Image (cartoon, rainbow, N blue to C red):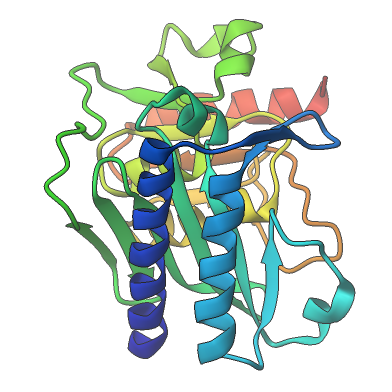
Amino acid sequence: MEYELTILSQAMSEAGREALRLASAGFETFTKADQSPVTSADLAVNRILQDRLSTAFPEDGWLSEETTDNDTRLSRKRVWIVDPIDGTRSFVRGLPEFCLSVALVENGVPTVAAIFNPATGEFFSAIRGRGLRVERLSDSDQPGFTSSERPVALVNPWELRVGRFEGLQDHLHCRPIGSIAYALALVAAGQADAAITLAGGNEWDVAAGVLLVEESGGRATTAAGHPVTFNRPDPRLPGTLAVGSDLPAPVRTRLIQHGLAAASHPL
């Protein structure tokens, strides 16, 4: 799998440079049918990643937020699951809380993964069974995530605003972040203690982050604590919960209870 990770790293580095170029030169923003934003940078990154990965691995399937889905991928043993830019709203606003997120899934399980924040230069990667790797690919003047408050849970900004984490505030600091994929990478790297979304999401949002968290010694599940499998006919997910390996057991238990309660009373 080292070869797959090498090709993936090269493709993501190239695509990340293009995202930064467009962030500086200018890009177009559109509204999708679900009212979420997509930019010409999302589409450019998607084209680069699909071209590089499909050329290197023509037999593999493909599932991306910015590519029209079809059931061909369901018959493939290996599938690349891609979010070209997770955190598009942050990208549009010029905030360094977006990332490229890609995982290679085999028989429903992520085996190779990488998350790249080109604004900060942080590159997180893993091969199943070989641990987490964290690098800085550039000398960006954008800071990475830092927090002096512990424990810290990275949460969906909208869910925080509407009070969905009120039951957790006495146990940890809930810090909003615009990308669940970047949040998962930060948990894996030990820069945050947990990440949680109580509803929604798709496979491409979390496929890479799940492997990164697991390879760091943490645990990543649905919000209700169920294992996540990938390359399903319907890629939608019922929320995500990731806990780092150092999170105190009582706080971990409280997070799981909160996720279960939210799953029992969905919006």
